[in-house]
Image (cartoon, rainbow, N blue to C red):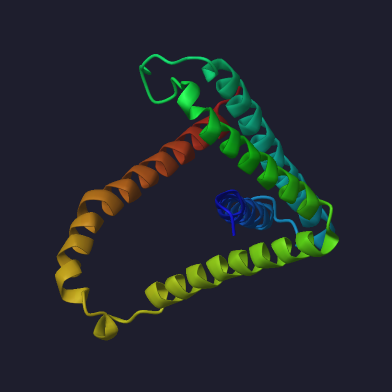
Length: 194
């Protein structure tokens, strides 16, 4: 496999991971924040749009590298920084441009392939469910924990008691004062003949 093909495969791997993460987050936000039911068709549209947006990014990167390569052509002086390219860099810049274009083409192909979109959505859905499952497991473990099963119970007891004294009880007193004040104001308003 050529260096360009290897770089394209690596770029696709990174882009696929980014797409999976974006789709997974979309599924979670829709379910948690928007209380929406899972709808494959809506998620597939989002997945396709995500792949196309990533392809656009790769095309933009290819255009940037192309401009850098053209600007570097014929410059033989020493460079003054990381992105101050010279003629000797044009070969690498041309290879980088081909890599970006290759990744973009493959992302567009995948966006147009219903089976590739389905696979992306299923992987993202499985990852989202894994997150929900792990969160529920942690929560059940913490909320279902009894003192005799918690190895840190003794060491954390003092911290919990201090938090109760310094945070929870003052907050409860302040809340009680607000309720008492509201009740007094309501009673005064009822007594006011105006």
